[in-house]
Image 1 (tube, rainbow, N blue to C red):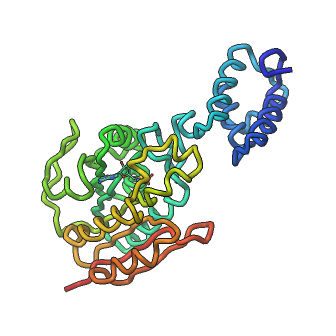
Image 2 (image 1 turned 180 degrees about the horizontal axis):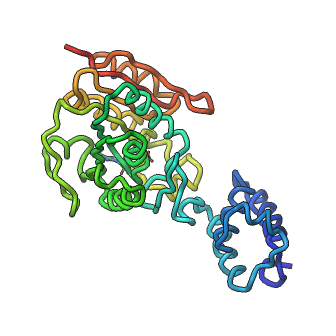
Amino acid sequence: MTLADKVWTSAEALAWTVSRFTGAAIEQPRLDAELLLAEALGCDRVDLYANPDRSLGVEERARYRGLIQRRLDGEPVAYILERKAFRYLTLAVSPAVLIPRPETELLVEAVLAFAAGDRGGLVAADIGTGSGAVAVSVAREIDGARVYATDVSEEALGLASENAKAAGVSDRIDFLQGDLLEPLASGIARVPDIAEAPGIAGTLDVVVSNPPYIPTAEIDALPAEISRYEPRGALDGGADGLSVLRRIIDAAPDFLRPGGLLALEIGEAQADAVSTMMKDRFDQITVLRDLAGLDRVVTGVVARP
Ligand SMILES: C[S@@+](CC[C@H](N)C(=O)[O-])C[C@H]1O[C@@H](n2cnc3c(N)ncnc32)[C@H](O)[C@@H]1O
């Protein structure tokens, strides 16, 4: 019996898929099966358990088969569903952007902790914004915060801009195309309909970034759903994985006010190297660990003269 020639209830379809995904060594077989079945049926995951005897119609079955096949081929669920949950947001994603990771929420938390003592009007730059996960969260969770979000990828900026609109914060984020902090220096905005960046050198409260930080030679050894599907430009941190981090650390002090925060996501083995790179220009260097206990974020504040 195959999925095609039987009348399936949602409980049966789920059980069959979990077993198939487990056999294919998919990491979260039940969660993925639930998300895809709910998508095919146009319902929420909880409805699958509220109505386990609901039978799948012909079109629903065909839709579900297509989604399962894409997952079995290795495509990440977030690209199949074209969305990913991140903090309070459901972000639109596409293969043009990295799928936002739960550990990146720690980066947002570091900015929130810094802003807690702020009297309002925080100004931040999110470098390599991708889907806008960090920029949109900062704008949404910090009252009145204004964010400049840069990326080299025009497609990523288009998606991030959609995500900002959906979250109701597009009036407080400027999306700028270019290399790292360079669009903030040149004041040139190359994304249509987006405001020009003012001259903001030396005035930012926060520079935050989750840059590409995987050593080039390690990318092909990552799980295929990352190495084959996620954009290389979002992963590749150069020969030692530190080349983009290094350039941000060099440039950020010129854009930050004295006492301003630099918050960087890092690879789990990069905390020492990144702390060392920061020590000449930054004080209060702190390494934060993610829920898995791995070094994930380094922060520091610009030393006062
Ligand atoms: C690891 S992804 C992070 C995306 C998003 N901030 C997140 O945390 O989910 C890195 C992003 O940096 C962008 N990027 C890579 N090199 C860049 C550069 N030189 N200047 C600006 N953005 C860059 C990539 O296009 C990608 O969107």
